[in-house]
Structure formats: C-alpha cells, structure tokens
Length: 173
Image (cartoon, rainbow, N blue to C red; front, side, top):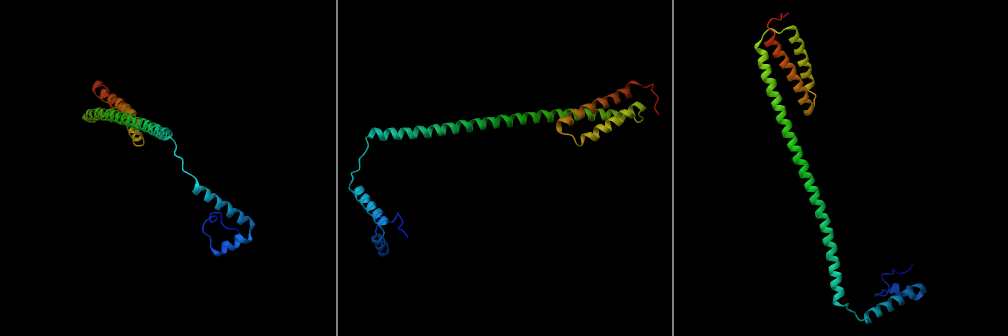
C-alpha cells in the first residue's frame, strides 16, 4: 500500500520511512515533494505593482455594483407590479361592492312596493315565479354573476310593480 500523497514531504513515522525505503515510486514522490518544499521556502515573494492591485479592486467592486443594481431593478419592478395589481384589485372590488349595494337597495324598495298589493294578478304570479328562479340561481353564483342576476331580478320586480299600478282594470284569478 502506498503512502498518501498529502503525507509526502512532511514528517513521516517509522512505518512510512520503511515503506519509502522499499518502494521506488513512493521514494521518487517523496523526493519530489521534499525538493518542491525546499524550493518554495527559498523563493522570494514578488509584490505586484500598486496599479495592478487597484485595477483588481476596481473590477471586483464594479462587478458587485452591477449585480446589486440588477437585483435592485428587478426587485423594484416586482414591487411596483404587485402594488399596481393590488391597487387595481381593491378598486375593482370596491366598485363591484358599490354596484351590488345599489342593486340590492333598488330591489328592496321594489319589494316594499310589491307588498302593498295583497292580491297578485295571473301575469304578476308568472313574473314572481321567474323572480324565484333567479333567486335560486343567486345562491351558487359568483359576485359578477350575482350583479347581473340582481339586475335581471330588478327588472322583473319593476314589471310586477308597474302591473300593479297601471292595470287596475285587470281581473285577478
């Protein structure tokens, strides 16, 4: 078994020295690592010019600034988009809520007028049946569909009220 290359050139124990004495490959590797280590220790450190260090420092700062600028730009775009979307959704919800309340108020006033007459005519009874069907569909409808159904119901109830007011000569059954 050969000696680990990380141990070559360092202080060796007795078993490793015996192995190096017997194995030519490990002896060669040990000699190379020892020579390399000796050469490194005898070399002088050369300092690069100051301009090189300044150039390196500027290039890393510029790269970091570009990365930060890109991230900030995308974050700002995402924040602006989400803010605009949120504001638009709130405004639409507010308008839809106002429309729904207005339609409900009109329907309530028409229902109050409808309750004044106790005996409906045949035509009024048919319209009341249609109103009940619309009310049944209102339970499973979304908000936008509810608004359309309430407007349709409002028209039917106003027809019933107009029939009550306008046709006093009509016979009821």
